[in-house]
Image (cartoon, rainbow, N blue to C red; front, side, top):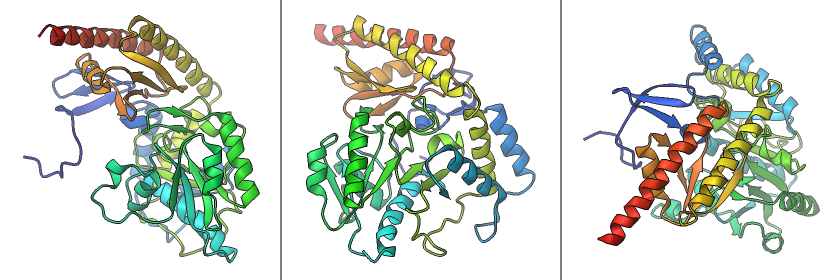
Length: 397
């Protein structure tokens, strides 16, 4: 028995190498990876530019700590600021850490103005913001909170897309509103772009900060560098991770200078955050994603994939209810238990990711080609046949 604490329901296989959109086992079995490490492997496995950047940096310097300047960190911060609404960035190792920073920053913003009593954050049902004690409280899902003692105070959850509920939740203690542009773990739940504009107006009206969790949606996943760009709205604070590292642990909290006013020396920190290895990879990811035409490719592949998925859904109305998502962040809302389809896809050597609300998530690397989209849809069609056949056998029994 493994000494690893069993917090994961792992599939009974291990991969030893990967290339592009494929993963391979020690036995030589190749799987088409449309989970991408849960939207992490943004440029596919072992992308040459990332391998080169990491290898080059590994021969120079791994770690010095944030007691000293880290040139790669300052370069990545400047580039992210230039490409977004933000003026500044704090680097961490994960999305949860980035969200923790965002929450602390929002509280500190009001404290710096003499309003220590404004610390609460309005969040939304179905959200997922990480696995720390604070971020599971922000997400508010019982399955994540159960057994971990008193819930961290400071979060008020309201129904998604309900502006009246948001308005009613605002009190003199409210500091911010936090939301994902597209709820990934919650089931690829979409948020109307008008709702973001309304949230921005409401936040401005009441002196609140708007926090966006773009951990899963960011770095080109929806066809824009960041998903909120579709709405025309800019946040005050934004958490990112996953895709910016392309498989290497990198997270960041981006903010306007005004929102970050309270984050002075000693108020926050990270031992490993922004280390030279991570920054070399992050800059290499940005090199590729910011190339002219890259995001156009994501949109083109997303449209192709969505159209093919729609055709399959039409062919199997007993299996599927609808398609959700934007770009290459898509979900199939199932009528049968979604795990049955995920298992059948696994048997067809196509890797996908489960999500809430009985949804199968499709999150291929952003470098996916039309031939891979077609291959995935062929395997999906075969998996549908497996599920239908199993249902017939069960009915006959």
